[in-house]
Image 1: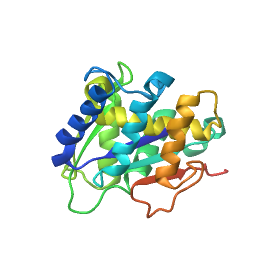
Image 2: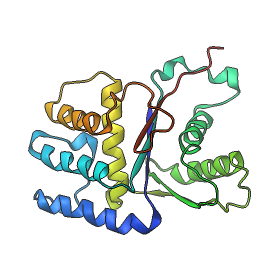
Image 3: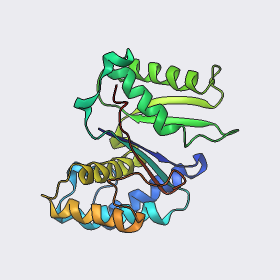
Image 4: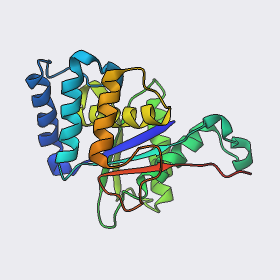
Length: 212
């Protein structure tokens, strides 16, 4: 399991979305084309490499990801939790190193299924309670969005896909390997081990469960 978050200042969201749309047009794609890791192909590899470069060249964009190497090793009963609760805990672990005092946050998550609204409310409550933000002053919004409508979600999907591909040890697609290698080269990390906690541009935690 891999989860990840693209961090973008509120005042830069429109400019970043426009930059991604421009890259689409430059590579002969419609501006409403949905960029996704699963859509990487030899014909479009140049476009996806340009998105990786866009991320690394913009000093205001950052990425934080958590890798759970083996979900089958999880013992939910030992921690009195179900899979949804574990999912919320992982989101908290991912975001807690992003949040800084006196800042406010809007969180947008990729809508996956018809239960997204209920999960959204539970996740918001969990994050706010974990941060003692009972009045929702720091986390002001948590909203599910459709990835084809939000360019930043699409960029996050590509980075998550690269991390997942590396940790699953896959190499069957030359186009995906090219994108993965570009991320590795520009990040300076293999993506299969923890980065320093202080890493700002690309921060990765390879999470291990309590052995109990």
